[in-house]
Length: 171
Image (cartoon, rainbow, N blue to C red):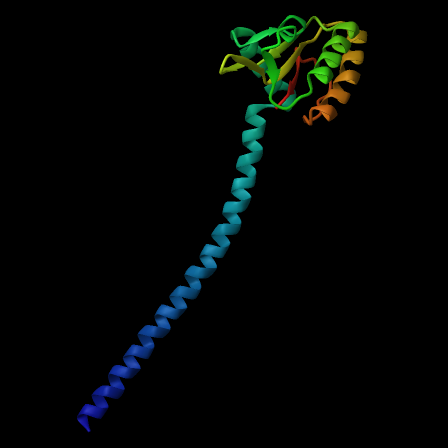
């Protein structure tokens, strides 16, 4: 009988421990779910503040434009496109040439092929950088052309916020 009594006492003690573990696990589970929700909202807020710290798309384009202007991986678009070994990854050279001419006719200060990379003796133009004038009427025309270029080259649209550059990824 003592053995049975000890067995019952041990069994009861084990159930108590298991119950504690289950309750603890459930509480941990709730805490994790609450923490995940909090983490998601924190991550969302973190992403928003990251975007704000990086600035608007226009500000990021201007920053990249300055980097391009300081680099040697750029060339005046008309001149660069005359060379048969100068090509684009995906963009149609005729489309690029058409936009280059339209940008110049509308009053662009400069139109550059940017982020140029060299592979096996060929130069690949990865982007088009348009240097914007300060004159409002020319800017209006350039942004109208730019809107079509955004669609043609599948870039995010930008609006005139006084920036210095328009940038079009060509790959």
